[in-house]
Length: 126
Image 1 (cartoon, rainbow, N blue to C red):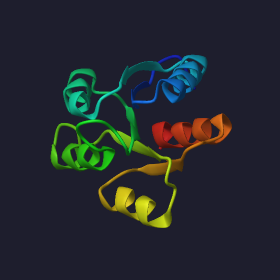
Image 2: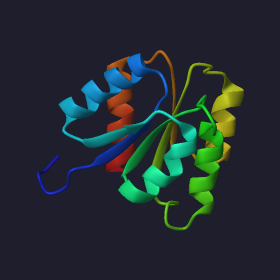
Image 3: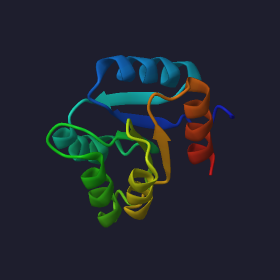
C-alpha cells in the first residue's frame, strides 16, 4: 500500500477481548480506527467518521449488526462504505442473511487474525 491513502476502519464490537485483538491488528496494519461497543451508537459514529470499512458484529446491544447493515445500505451517504460482518454463529443462514442485507463480507468468530487481515485487505483494496 502506498502512503497516499490511510484507510479508516470502525470496529462495532461489544466484547472487549475481541475488540482488543482487532485494535491490535488495525494498529499493526496501519489503519486509522475507532471502536463503538454499542449498536445504538454505531450509525451516528459511522456518519461522523465516514470510515472506509465497518467491522460489524452481528450480536450487539440496542441494535443488531443486521439492522445497522440494512440502515447503512438504505442511506445514500453511507451506502458506499464496505461492511465486514462478524458472527459467533457462522451458519450458512446467518451468512446469507448478512450478504442479502448488503454486507460485503462475512467472517465467523473465533477467527484467525491472518484470515481477518486478508479479508479486510480484500475489501479495502477492491
